[in-house]
Every structure is written in structure tokens, then in C-alpha cells.
Image (cartoon, rainbow, N blue to C red; front, side, top):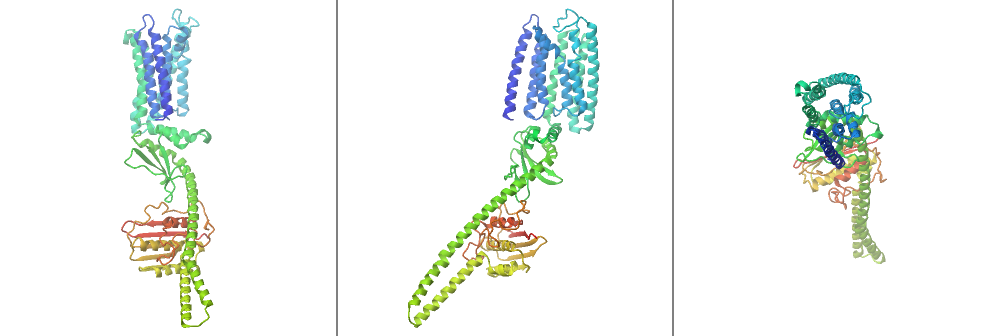
Length: 618
């Protein structure tokens, strides 16, 4: 329960309790005052208690507010017996309002809102009859009746007014019965079990209370105390019955649907958030909305941030929200507070389209955030790779070239053609060949010559030749855009390196195929499996951000991420496994930036299958 409604309930409860106590003291502090007058504050407390419970358990339901208003009416009605004329006048004016409130509750049940023009007209008529048509009863009483509002001694007019009030009131209750019968016909069986007895009791109360006054002679021997006690008892049980029906849940789905429907019909600037409206309708302030934005990002909140569903064993329940059999989100609610999930399911059907609109917004936000993170990782990986290449050049090739330059300088200063000089020159040549080979391996790790000169298929064959385990290649010889070929090669290199170094595979298979959209690269191994189990980017369905097929870092056909830049056989200077911080995530970023998707299937003990599908753009 939210703090604000609880504080307001406590404040109102204290005020009504104090007013009732004061009224009871005033009414009973009169000579010969009957004990039955205490029923006025007691009825007020009963109406308030029922209304407060209903409001706190169903904050968005207005039934509780009507009952709380009824408590104030009962306190005002009791003032008709006060010794002060001004207070008594107030009580006389509102004396029949409790009957109108019962009719209002019947028409407003279960949401507290009046549905349709008929209900609004009938309820307005009930209040009019209780206030306006009741006026002759106290304005034209005979002299000596003791009413402070008497204007003339016209008992005939008083009787006429009473008759008109009875006829109009009876007609309005017949109309109420017709409206409720129509609702019963369209209700479900559980709803009828709640509404039927409630309607019968409510209508019977409104009819019986004035009827008992006409039959007080034969029923109560003309005893006004017994008559009022019977009337008050009937009216005091009304809010208890309605509050119980609101909380039972038989009509809770309908109430929630009505409240959410009213929210959907409001102007955008006049309504609360969807989550707030749902919380009010369900009476659960802890309710959450999570959105499904596809396999790539999974569940997110309204801000596009990652979200998770609660454990099924927890005290939080989950109801999926679908639009035309397509998952758009879920409602997470307090399963202890809402034991019956049916109201949540009905609410899910009402808000489905509105939630789908929020999902589209969240999907754009999530895609933008994913692209931002991806570009940040790409930039960081590119910087790391530049530093690695610089370090390899400095520590390896550069150092060896410096030593060779010194030896060449020494040979240049020697003026002989002895066998020793020739041997030194031959050794210098061999070391130069070694440096060139090392430099070639470094260049091969950055981007192989086979890929640049002959395409992705040739590069796949070249990688297979370097593998220490049997590797089968099925590759087309087609050429693709440079960025696409680069991405495909890095997927193959990373997957093969992981298969050898981590999965302990005995056989490998590589496929390169042209598809209608671009190229499909698949790498299979028979290793231990279990790869990429925690990789949140492993599977995607395309780039929702609309990023083009170009490299956002401007690295062109080269390596924008530096993922797996080493020789997959371990011969090169780089890290063949992508341990420098990229790995599968780096591959996913590279493929994602081109608008493609990367999928990883790696059940433990079942080998690994990595598939990259990259569009060619045009």
C-alpha cells in the first residue's frame, strides 16, 4: 500500500471517529434521548471502515471513496436529532441521502464509475429525489412538529411531496433493476455470483427502508426505536457487502478493465503513466512493466535498460502481454497481494496495444544505447590493437632490425673478402629473412593477403591450412564488400582459434555461402562446447538502429575492433583467442555494426556452432 493513501485514510478515519464521538455525545446528552441514536455514528464508522479497506486494497477503485462519502452523510443525517436548530436543519436536508448512496453504489459497482447515460441519469434522479423531493416533508409539516425549516402548516403538501418522492424513487429503483438485469445477462458466471445477490440486497434495502416506515404499525407496534433500528441495520450492512464484493475478485477484472479503459480514453496530457494507471487498476503499487525487444536485447524497462523477470519461486508473479500472438512485454506484480492472476490477464489484454507502443520506444532507446556501447568497445579495441601492434613491432621486429643494422655497419667497415666475412653476410641475410617472415606473420594477423587479394573463400582455405587439426572448407569463390569480408574472416579466425585452444576440437568445418542478403559464415567443431553461455550479445535479429554497412570507426576494410588479430594457429604475434578483451563480444560488435547477426550454439559436450550472417547492403 502506498504511503499517501494510507496517510489520507488515517487522517479521514481520525476525523470521522472524532466527529462521530462528538455527535454521539450531543445526541445522547438530551433528556430522554433513546439509545438508538448511537446508531448514526456507528453507521458512519461502518461505512468509513468498509470504504477505507476497499480504497487501500484497490487504490484506483472509486467504490471506497463513495462509501467514505457515505460515512460523512450518516454523520450529517444524525444531526437531525440535535438540539441545535442549525444542526438539525442540516440533518433534515440530507436525511434520505443514504438511500441515494445505495443506488449510486449499485450503478457504480465494481469500478466506482458510472457507465452509460442511463446509469448517470438514474443516479442523478436518486440524488434529486433524496434532496429536492424530500423538501416538502420538512417544509410543510404541521405546527408543533418541531422542525426548524417549516415555512407553512400544509400537511397536505407534505403528504403530496412524500407520495411523489415514493413514486419517483420506486420508478428509479425499477430502472435500476432493469439496468442491473442487463448487466447480469452480459456477465460471466463468477461475476453473476457476485452481482446477483448484491443487486438483490441493494434494491431490497432501498425499497424496504421506506416501506418499513409505512408498515411500522403492524410490524413494530408503532415503536419508532424498533423501526429505526431495523432501517439502520439494513443500511449499515450495505457498505460491508459492497466492500467484500470489491475485494473478492469476482469482479476485479472488470473493474480493472474499466479503469484502464478510462485511462486509454483520456487525453495524453491528462493521464498518468501506463504503469501508474495499471498500478491503480490492480491495487498494487509495486507493479512493473517489462518490454520484450527481441532476442538481441531481451527484456528491458521503459528506459531501454536491461531488465530481468523474477524467479518463479519468488513472491512476484508474471503475466505475459501479447499482440496477435507476438510477445511485447510482461506485467510483474505482487502475487501475495493479488492471489488471483485473472485481473492481471484481463488488464494485459486491455493495455497490449499501449504497451506495444512503449515497447517500440524502448526498442529504439535500447538499440541506440547498444550502438553507443558497441562503438565505445570498437574504439577501445582498435586502440588496444594499435598498441599491441606497436608493442610487437618495437619489441620484436624493430629490435631485431636495429641489431641487424649494427651488424651491417660492422660488415661495411671490414675490408676483406675472407670466408668469415662471407659467413657473416650469409648469417645477416638469414636473419633479414627471419625478420621479413616475422613481419609477414604480423601483417597476416592484421589482415591476410589471401583475403585482400582473393577473397573470403581463399582466406578460409588459408586458415584451414594453418590449423593443427583436420579442417574441411566449403566456400564460394565470390567476392564481397571489403568490410563484409573482413568481418567474415575475423569470425572464422576467432571461432577456429577458440575451437583449437579451448574446445579441444578434433575436427573443424567452415562454410562460406552467399545468401539473398549477403554472406553466411558458419564454423562448427566437435569440441567440449559451452562457449558463449554468458554472452549477452551472442544472438541478434539485425540492427534496429539503422546503422549502415560501413565501419563507424573509419577503419575501412581493416580491423576496427582488433578482435582475434593473431594467427589462429598461434604462429602470429597476436592473441588468437581474443583474450585482449574482445572474443565473442568483439565479433558480435563487428557483425552488428554491419547490420548482421551472430548466433552461438554451444551445448555442453555437444560442440560449438557459430553462424554470422552479414548483409552486403546493395
